[in-house]
Image (tube, rainbow, N blue to C red; front, top):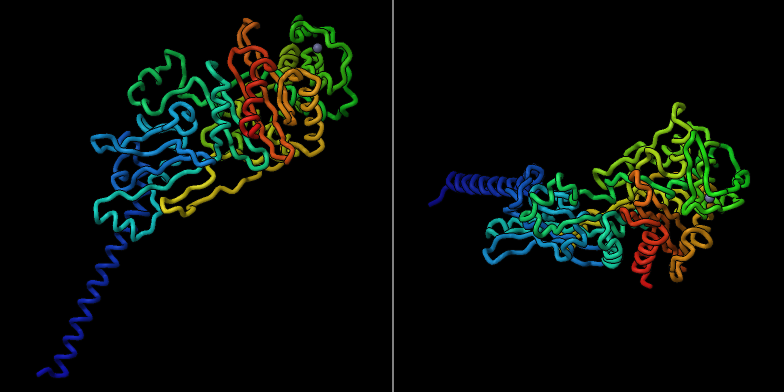
Length: 477
Ligand SMILES: [Zn+2]
């Protein structure tokens, strides 16, 4: 017979047992959540070895894709069943995607946390954990366009240098190439060679974001703006070029010793007349020159979502010799820039003066196709006002219509640009080939670009045709 008292005690036992099981279950879930969500961060941040480290025991590193869905990094298994990171296009995306092995670089390093974190449903993750299966990490969808990247890569060919292309309306990086490069698939095997600075090949350096180059005549964009900001109207400028400009016993020559004759501002810019710009440099208040360069992001960290980019440098003050000011005005002297910086500058000109901060990861997606995080374009604000951008657009249009880039075949695209041929040794015959500018199609879609080919020679002969091929790949004609 059960008494009331007994019934009560049984109910109490059931209650206590349920509570215990309940607590145990909650504890177990809490443990999993803590492990999956909280500890994951510290595990991943501590992970810096080639075998994907502790946390990778539970999550398989996610893939990296181009904007058009091509796989550019993924995890597979070798015949021993070990995980191997594979880069199907080998060198094509090397500095962009980076590598895992001997530490990490590129997107692999900066997004390691996301790639080793899984956002598939919690029940699937727990299920995987209990059955000893790995959960699939999240994937990155970059802003890179496969064909555009390929055109940039092939365009550089055997030359060292860099190409970077940005959508001016959003800041999306569409292509980024740096050479010399490396094959991320075999980084372990050839590490000592690749990383040997004595050999001077610096293949690990991403020249697009961290190169320090003399800007050459591409800098005439900055000089022009400084001249205008120093209280001059465009029509104030007039110069008669006889092929050279003398200052402090120093002679600055026009390219090929050509005499450009009488020029207005637009003609001097389109002809890339060194004499006119050396003269112009001396007319600009030095403080104004410096503040204009700094308004255009010199001597400061670049506003971009990319990590570890190199600042460009510009220096002129009251003690600077006139001959140095003249050289600075034509992009020689001590000024250095990165291709990324020059690309940002022309992207802002293309976007009525407003700079959109460059970025390369569009979204992070879980293995079951949920968007975990998406990048919204960010405006840095104006680098210049719309009227200044309008004038520079006109001058860059003249470069292509009647100036140094008039013989370059840009197809049906409307192109605005500036060529550059930058001296970087005492031997003035060896020069870097530059092109910066942007193209626009009939629908108003734009692409800004900066190209530098080390030691290649005239910008109009090498860098500008390369830019044209990249534009054609992007716009699909
Ligand atoms: Zn000239």
